[in-house]
Image (cartoon, rainbow, N blue to C red; front, side):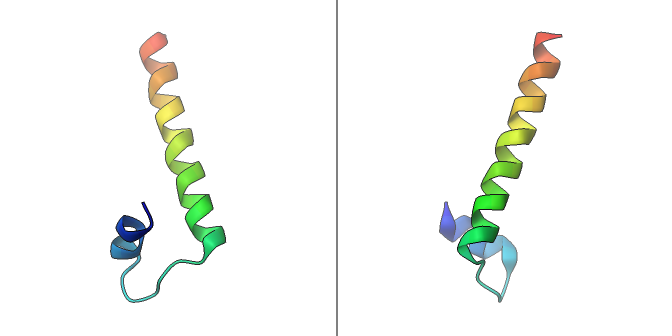
Length: 39
């Protein structure tokens, strides 16, 4: 997970807090997609 995020971030490696925020954001997007499929 971390290595993929570092590739996206470019030269600056993400801080732990940024990594957690990215994971939370990804999870929220996945939840929205699931909710749309249920509707």
